[in-house]
Image 1 (tube, helix red, strand yellow):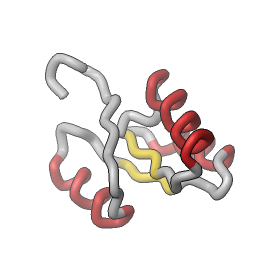
Image 2: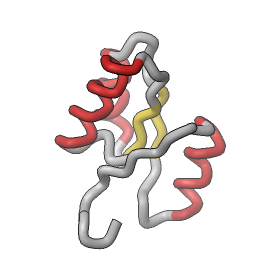
Image 3: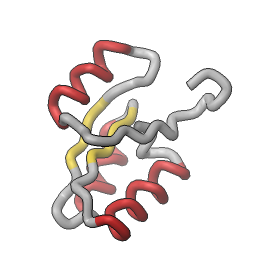
Length: 79
């Protein structure tokens, strides 16, 4: 979550590179995530969600069913 930010972009790519895991990219704005997803092999899944919106988080988790969730969405004092 927060994949479109600076930390999220770097972390998602590094997790994919080092682990070979299937990566899901989630964030509030889908367009930049779609661009990033095309760079992954296999292509990453993309989900729109907001850490402040429980329903959007639940929908993303149900669609992707992740084993691990990494939240790098800032405002880091509240999330």
